[in-house]
Length: 345
Ligand code: NAD
Ligand code: TYD
Image 1: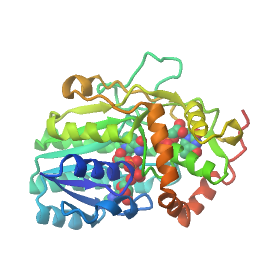
Image 2: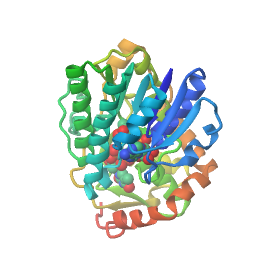
Image 3: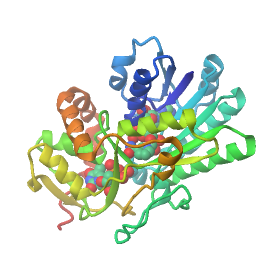
C-alpha cells in the first residue's frame, strides 16, 4: 500500500509516520508537508534513510504540486493531517486557516477524484462539535452531535469535514473522517498547553493558565490516536465519521499540576492570565463506535503518558530548544507579552 501522509512533519502526522513504518514495514509512506512554523524535519530525521519513506515539500493548497505528486506516485491512501492547528493563532490571523484547512482539503479531494484512490481519510477534531457545559458531566460528543464551532480554527475544520462528506455523497469518493480529542506526547509543538508547560518549567519560566484553569479537555496519548487512524483506514466504513477519545477528562489546572509534579514543581510556577476569547468549556468524546465497530481501545493511561512525555522532553532538549529560539520568541511575546498577570484568581 502506498500512503500519502500530509502534515507528516508536524506533531501527530510525525508520530503517525513513525507508527506506520514500524507497524507496517511493507507499506510505502510519502510525507507531503509545507514545513510551516509547525513542521520540523528533525521530527523525521530518523526515518529519512528508510527506503520505504519519502519526503516531499509542498503546500496542500498548491494544485499543480499536488496533482503532479498524485500522477507520479499513484497513491492508494491519503491521510490528511496537514492543517493550521492552533486556536490562539486562528484568533490572531484566521485567513491562513481557511486557506490551508478548507482550500487545501478541497485540492486534495479534487486530486483524489482525478487520479482515483482507495481511501481518503480526513483527520478532524472534536472541536467541530463546539463545547459542553461544565455542569453536565453526563453529556458527551457522539458522531451525531451537530457541528457547532467556536473558533476560526474549529470553523475551518468543520468546513473541511463538510466538504469531505459532500465529495463522498456527490462523487462517491471513498472517504472517512475521524474526530479526536486533545493529543499529547513526543514531538508536540511547544505552543500547546502540555509541551509549553514543560519547556517553560525547564527554562525556569512561569506556566500561563488561561482564566481560572477550569476548562476541561479529554486527553489522549498520541500513539493511541495513530492506532485508531490505522484501524479506520483499513477497516472503517466509507462515508462514516469515527470519534476517538479515551474518557480521560481533566481540568486544565489538573493537567498543569500533574505535569508540574512530574517535574518536581508545584503551584508556585503557575501564573493566571487573561482568558482566551470564546474559550470552549469542555470537550468529552464518546468513543463507543470505535470500540464496537473496530475493536479500538486506548492503551496508555494519562499518568503513564505524562511520565513518558516529560521523559521524552527531558531527553530531547535539542528538538524543542531549536524550536523555541528564533521566530517562536516573537510569537510568545505577541501572545503572552501583555497578557500575563492580567487575571488574578
Ligand atoms: P501541527 O500544527 O503540529 O502540524 C501540522 C503540520 O501540517 C505541520 O507539519 C505543517 O508544516 C503542516 N502544514 C501546515 N499547513 C500546510 C499546508 N498548507 N500544506 C502542507 N502541509 C502543511 O498539528 P497537529 O497537532 O499534529 O495536528 C494534525 C492534525 O490533527 C490537524 O489536522 C489537527 O486539526 C488534527 N487534530 C489535532 C489534535 C491535537 O490535539 N493536536 C486533536 C485532534 C485533531
Ligand atoms: P491547547 O493545547 O491550545 O489545545 P486546545 O485549545 O485545542 O484544546 O489548550 C489546551 C487547554 O489549555 C485550553 O483550554 C487552553 C488552555 N491553555 C492555557 O491555559 N494556557 C496556555 O498557555 C495554553 C497554550 C493553553
